[in-house]
Length: 153
Figure (tube, rainbow, N blue to C red):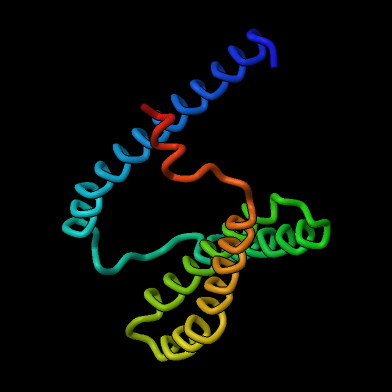
């Protein structure tokens, strides 16, 4: 490899490290900032609220879930590595769906059906998808933690 190619590779690695650091800093600030906001919501939101556009909200969410499922299936059949992203998105949507179905059904007779669907369908499917995604990620070639740490210095 020529000196100019080595310099370019070093520049690219430095840029990747800088982007990684900035991304992690941003995510840290967001996580810390979300804590007081969550406390404010817990103290100020009403326990009951009349909802407008209930049907549009739930149908829209289920449309997103269908898109995530279809994308995951299609990308899986095509053996495209983007299946990792769509599979993880689908798992997160399933977990959110289970949470909202159960929490919004509290105090009604529908809580048992919501809980059963969460425990026997949505959460196991989400866990399966996360397990599969983690398996696919583990097949990727990643630098070791020691190599990444020593190169960040």
